[in-house]
Image (cartoon, rainbow, N blue to C red; front, top):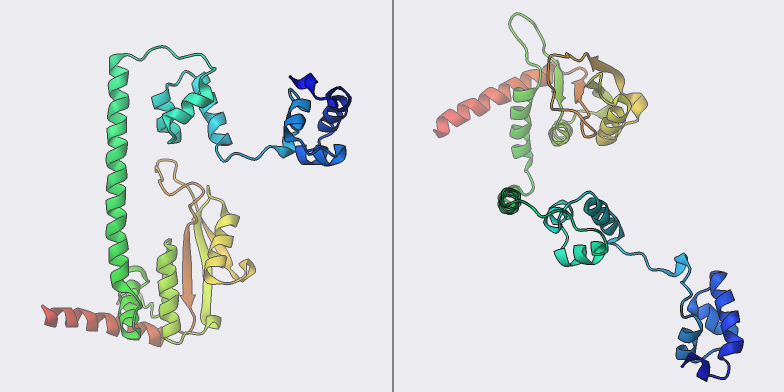
Length: 282
């Protein structure tokens, strides 16, 4: 019994008072010169520990969300689909809350179908990623010759081209893919194009976060935002349903190379050389 210890009655008020001031068990033990953990447990019985002594639980957010979903009437299966945690954990977290009404057979069938489909999607995603990873490993480091041809083909697909009715023998490249931009810049470095000859401009819809896009592209190419030329704002057509929206939308980056007429002619020559080489290989 707690009162069997001769020091219990004298020590308990002091131990409780120290606990309520926010001291940990170790601090209370040292203050009272206690070396008996069993006695300390009895002295503090019923007195909650201070918040700072509680270890953070990585699942606290999930637990709170599970309880919120349970109060909305969701079942264990539905909460599991939402949070991706085990049913045993969910049961511990919400067992004191009221049970939702029983599901109809059709609802049970929908949940089972959803589980099967989610599993199938996960398997497909894993297979898709394995294929991508294997293909990526096949490339390894590009030689200068490989990068030369890749860059020429990339420019001919995405860059501005000269026409007989409109002379445009200078380099202008526009793209929204950061990887494409990085490859294009690596190609320009291979060709000996100095950074001083490059000009950058962001092109983006008026409904987007223009400032965020400017910082994004400036960071990617390694220049200060102030070094960007004036951003081109595209007006939004209300009749068009755009998919490229949201926090991850940064518009396009326009790269211009000054004094690039001779380089443009070489690019055109490289491209037609690639075409002829492909014909010979066939």
